[in-house]
Every structure is written in C-alpha cells, then in structure tokens.
Image (cartoon, rainbow, N blue to C red):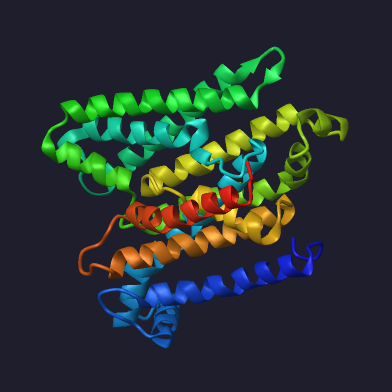
Length: 344
C-alpha cells in the first residue's frame, strides 16, 4: 500500500496511521469522567486482564465499544465514498447517490412505525437495524435494475435512478412521519440524526466484519478505478471488466453504507468530504486514496463523536449533526477553491 507511493503520499499515510491510535486514546479518555492518556490505556489493559477497576469499567462498557465503532463506521463510509467518486468519475460524488442511505433510512422508519411501543431495549435496536439494512439493499437492487440493460450498466442512468429512488424513499418517509404520533416521530428524527450511543460488543463485531469485507476488498479495485478515470471505453481497451467492476463496487458500497446506517443512523459528509480532501493531498491514485480515506474517515468520525459527547455534556449531540457542522465549511471551502481556479 505504501511502498509504491510517492514520498509525499507515504508521509500522509504514515501520518494518518500514527494519528489514529492517538485520537482513539484521547477519545477513550474524554467524557463525563475525564481520564488521562495513561488512565485510558490502563483502563484498556485492566479490561483486557479482567480487572474491574473504575477506569476499566468505564472504558470496557461505555467508551471503548463506542470509539471503535465510530472508527469502523468512519472507515467504511470514507472508503465507500472514495470508490463511488472513482466509479462516477466525479470528486463530489457520495455513497448516497445510489440510494442506499435513503433506502436504509426508510427501512428504519418503517421498522420504528411498525413496532411502535414494542421498540424497547436490544430487541428494538435489532429490529431497527435489520429494517435499515434491508431497506438499503432493496434500494440498491432497484437502482441497479433500473440502470441495467442488454448493453450493460450505465453509470449516468444509475445516478439518475439513485436520485429518483432517494426522492421516492424520502416521500414515503415523510408520509410515515405525517401519520406518526409524537413518540414515534421523535424516534425517527433521532435515528436520522445519527448516533453511536447504542454501541455494544455485538454491534462492534458486526461492524468489524463489514469493515473487514468492505475496506479490505475496495483496495483490490484500485487498478480498475484508476483505469475508469480515463473513461469506460479506455478501461475496456486496458483489459478491465467494466461491468463486473461496477457490480462489485455497487454491492460492496451498498453493504457497507447499509450496515453503517443500520448501526448508527444517517451520518452525513464523511463519505463526501474525506475522500475529496485526501484526493487533494495525495492525488487520484486509488491504490493510496482508498486506504488514506479509510484512515482519515475513522479519525474524523471518532473526533466528531468525541465532540458530540463533550461539547454539551452531560447532554449528547447526535453525531450526524456534528459531522455536518464540520463537513459543511470544508465542503464550501473546496467549492470556492474549485471556482477560484476555474475547475469544473
């Protein structure tokens, strides 16, 4: 991953690799009870040895699962965003363009409305997560079906189909909200804002498995994505199986983003801003861009979740609000730079 990269790219990758564990330790120590870096590491070690000290209990039962879940989901969203931007050949593309985010949100909303007062405890969280995951996959299947023909799969048609499915899912979701009572409406609203407060070992294990599959598989498509930057015809001349690449990337992104929404609700801008910033820093080579985006996405979401926990303590902000607050200024800055230099 690093050996082939230019010196500047290697520095960025090494810097991100060294920064991530530091951010994780700081995040573990941040909260209602502040722990020093030494106490945070000591709490992790105490938990590992089975010693139930105060720091060990705080770290093992509350902070460590949440911080690790944030890192995994951030890596999934950012690497998926890098893949989608390469597939659509647009640095401002986002994983939600294929409808998976809207479909997952609708699936979660349907689960919340259908279960109603029965959403209590772990079983309620599981029902919502399953609904979100199923909704995301169904939306992607519809988008892919609409974009497929005997001539192959059109990226432009896939984009338009994703916009249409997202609009339809949004309309149905609004209809559900219109007929929902106050309690159900609040549940739906909180879900859509995103949050990592439901982190536990089961969710962490599921996120780790999805991250291993998605973030581990996407770098294998770095060469096809690099070829697609030249255009589909040129990629075919270079021996790339374009149709197979499209299908594989859409499926991987659908699984990754669908799982992320199922675990943490809708978290905006991570899949859009992080790959774009990494592309400005290290260039468009996906061999380095995808791993760098995964590391930076993990860092960003851990930082955002830490801010969500401490800015208005003891009240917690939804992490989706924090990522939007962080992401929007960066995004506007990037757009202004593109306009300043005449980029289109």
